[in-house]
Every structure is written in structure tokens, then in C-alpha cells.
Image (cartoon, rainbow, N blue to C red; front, side, top):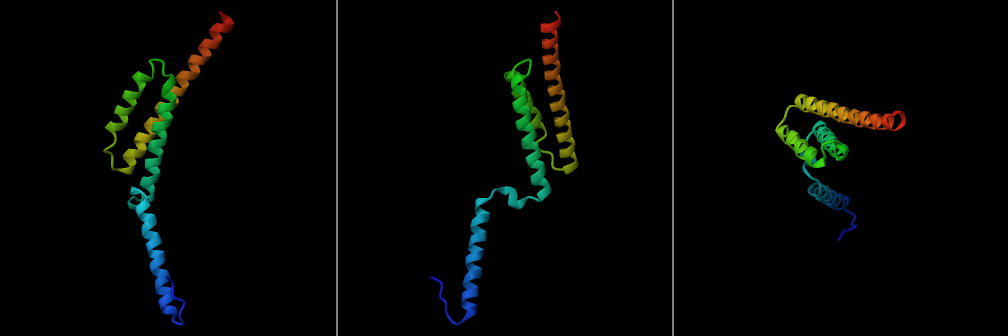
Length: 120
């Protein structure tokens, strides 16, 4: 396919076309991340990570996972239309606060169970 002729122009033009085709192929394989600025990709990753962590910690929620999961989903769907980065960061901070509160609830529950088993 490639012609190695004395003309370096022909060879360099073919190289450019091949490189361009590789870039186009890579771009069609990626998702919407190419169209978003880097800060939005980071925020999207943070939101997904927070959702996964809350789902994981919600498995041991005192009222049960079937109570926790629909409310978590509802809370995230309520904020899915946020476009401003500051609002998204504020919502992430609120989610982190909720995560820490639930984690504290679990530690308190564990502490009370251990205290009851040793001192009562």
C-alpha cells in the first residue's frame, strides 16, 4: 500500500492520512468525554464514585437496602439537571456529608453492640 518512492511528499502525505484515520478511529471509540471539558469529566467521575460508595454503604442501613436504594436514587435524580459547577460541587459535598453520617451511624451501632455484649 505504501509507496516508497523518491518523492518524500507522497510518503509524508500517506503518513498524515494514516495518522488521521487512527485518530478518527480512536475518537469514534470514546464516549461523550471528548466533548466535555476536563473539569466536567472529573465532576462526573466524582458523582458516580459517590453514588457507588453510598450504594455500598447502604447495604447495611438499619431500615434495609430496599428502603435506602429508592431514596438514594430519588435524591440523585433530583439533582441530575444541575449544570453549574459550583452547584454540582455543593451537591457532592452534601453527599459526602451524608456518607460520613451513615458511616458514623454504623460505628455507633457497632460500639453499642460491643458495649452491650461486654458490660451487660
